[in-house]
Length: 125
Image (cartoon, rainbow, N blue to C red):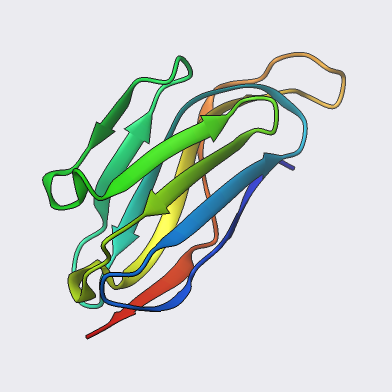
């Protein structure tokens, strides 16, 4: 079973930093685009950063210049380095990856989106 496991969330003061990690595991053929989303209480899920398999990145305006997305293809892991955190960054953060899994027989299966379990980031004033 392919899964994404997130870690690194926590409580931090405004102006501080955190690094989130999201590691893929299971029978995986390849991992394509990866990204980070967040959802604040009472608000919609928001895409905040993406990275392609080749390393090209994009950011939502609220996090540009403060957050950095990166990936380690050998580890199947995507990271989100968050700096200069603000109270409005408080949310549950979810990673997402487009993955082509392998069957039990080692054959490539259909590409699909997979999600991490979510990790809470709380930024205090």
